Image (cartoon, rainbow, N blue to C red; front, side, top):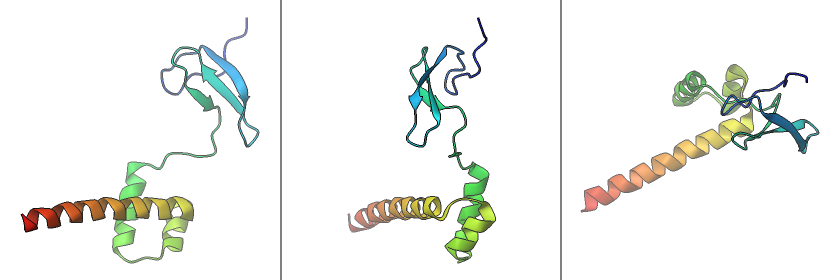
Amino acid sequence: MLAPLFKCPSCGSNRVVKNGKSHSGKQNHKCRTCGRQFVSEPANTTISDETKVLIDKLLSEAIPVASISRITEVSETWLYNYLKSKLNAYGKWAGDRQQNEVS
């Protein structure tokens, strides 16, 4: 029997089986231990906390989004979504703060 080529990114188990193809044509795998489905070489990668801190600093300096995207090597779409989530979080925080001042 051949050794499995992949380990589950969640639990580290080597009980992994093929599970069809993704919409982009890449091979899907499924862990028989935890049930997690994953692609062996995902195109999307997670953005590190260090990169997010750098993006926050660059945004505070009023640098254009296109430049920040180029400098940090993240997509403009991801950057706009990140900025929107930051603004929504700030809006909720500001709304809570205003309610506390009224009380």
